[in-house]
Length: 446
Ligand SMILES: Cc1ncc(COP(=O)(O)O)c(C=O)c1O
Image (cartoon, rainbow, N blue to C red; front, side, top):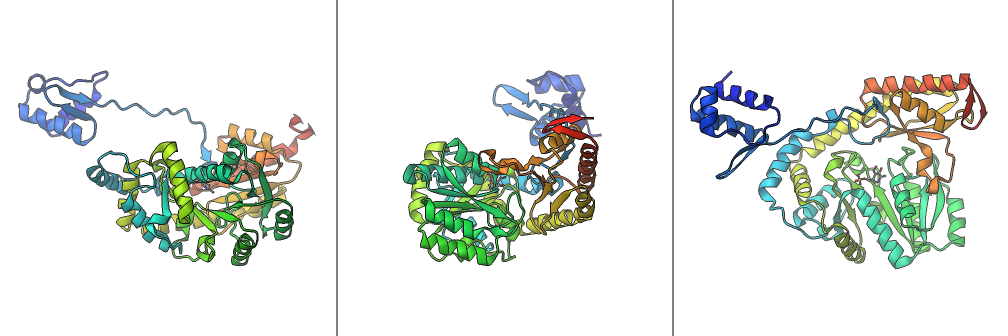
């Protein structure tokens, strides 16, 4: 090993040291020339393990070991990509470029102009046509949804319709703002339009929230006919639609229409995320809306966090510009389809255990509906003891008002081995639960 690398290793093995010895002291200690020590200190800086302050010295950056307390072995809960699919290495280069061009200043609440231009082009590939000025960059889609809900509450009072089940994060926003919402049914057959139209006659409406494609949690898409019907109702009853297209990039060039694409009456606010197909930690999302809404949302955004982190924005911009994104998405889509296919073999065994599996051919989630003999809350606890984390279907309902008797299983953050282990684990726990008799809800007699 070269001498300078020996010095690096030596320093990294030291405990509890902050300021490194001076070049001269270190050269004496290691029996080498000052030039070799300088090279070693530079190497530490290149590895981001040290920094030098002029006229002061070189300091080590402490690395705190990650806690290993996590007992979840099979994560069917998280919707983030599994580590092997996260494009971290390439994104690191993009961030380095971002660091060189960004100057860590505040920016406009609507986001960097350059990113908005890149996004306007990018969205064309999803058949979402807009101009940069129609876009507001948000700190994740979640913030976009929160800002819209805040705007609705201020400007319109209530008058919000929400499909259910639906994304729990939006339902929690509505609950936390204490908004009254009228709920309408979304099922595997789409929207129950008869019931929705009846509701529309009874209750005033100004806004409606839906996840038309790759529904969270059901995994289904609305048909084109249903999308057009929804837009027709929006015109007839004079309301706006919040379209949550959180997995929009799974749809690049695939032609699963968005409501935004089909809309010819400016009735849609389009909200989207990069978390599920890219990196959730960068917290960059976006919304596309007619100008008057963008102006209102900009003011709310500014009062909330001034602007979304400029480094993250610039990093994403570089990544999208480098055109690697397309390849990355192709890889993610293929991996997800393979995972969804891999659970097909469990359909029968689950059916025999009284569970219906709903497996879409694209997206992240499968939905399991259980027969009434299975006590879901107990099942979740028993699965947790085995290290299997799943999502209770009740969280996808307003004020958790409905016993869904269902679980959402996300295949995003697990590889195929884990999927098999997890599915078998769930089957075992169901069978075990069925072998014990329930005396009353939640209490069992072994
Ligand atoms: C349907 C849906 N919308 C929005 C979000 C929020 O995404 P983001 O991480 O961009 O805030 C999620 C995250 O799980 C989601 O599932």
